[in-house]
Image 1: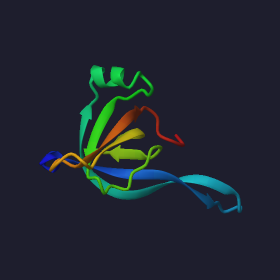
Image 2 (image 1 turned 180 degrees about the vertical axis):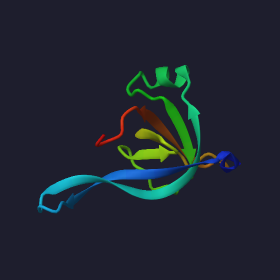
Image 3 (image 1 turned 90 degrees about the vertical axis):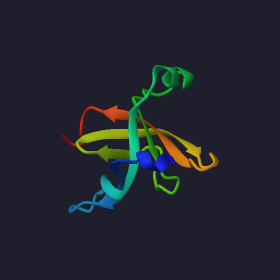
Image 4 (image 1 turned 45 degrees about the horizontal axis):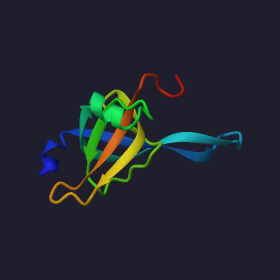
Length: 111
């Protein structure tokens, strides 16, 4: 099964509206669930098949029950990856999984 390759843990981060100390509405990045998955560099063929719609740099396979959305950030170690697309492979026999199309971020928010 594909889950045997889930050797990397990522933390899902998502922007959430909140109120600061001065009672101003602000968007703040909040850490959510940790997910186990498999990270690999995206192939040139895959990027070409997506018509270079996104600057996809990596693919992350994870469980179909993962609470991840397009626009989220996945932190794996010190690296950050923006979720640009999600392919649902929940119909793939015994290898049911989500395939996240990720873009590696080069800057941290707020730095």
